[in-house]
Length: 113
Ligand code: DGP
Image 1 (cartoon, rainbow, N blue to C red):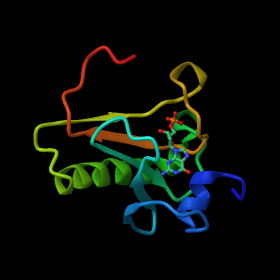
Image 2 (cartoon, protein in one colour):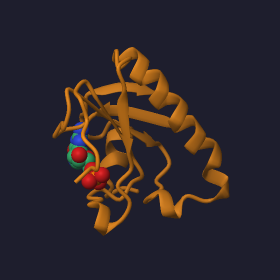
Image 3 (cartoon, helix red, strand yellow):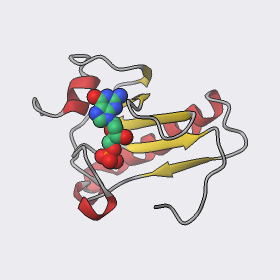
C-alpha cells in the first residue's frame, strides 16, 4: 500500500535501521525504542493487523515467528524477551500494518500497561 509507512520501509522508500530482510519478512529498529533492543518484524505483504490475516497468510505468520526467534538469538537476548502485537485501538495500534514488537535487554514487568 503506497501510503503505508511500513510498506514504504519494506520497499526502502523510507529509511530505517534494517536488521533483517528476506522475500517475505523485514525487520528494523523501532524509531521510539521501549527497551535496549526493540525491533519491529513485519510481513512484506500489507496485512493491516492480526485480525485480518487469512488462511493464505499462515505461512508468513510462521515465518515471522521463526525470524523473531533467530533475531532474538542474534541480539543476545538469552535472558529472555517479549513479543508484542498491538491489534486495534484498545491495544494502541498506531500503524495499520501487522508488526511484531520484539523487546529485550531489560527486565520486563507484568501485567503490561
Ligand atoms: P503500534 O503502536 O504497535 O502500532 O507501534 C508502532 C511502532 O512503530 C511504534 O513503536 C513506533 C514505530 N514506528 C512508527 N513509525 C516508524 C518509522 O517511520 N520508523 C520506525 N523505525 N519505526 C516507526
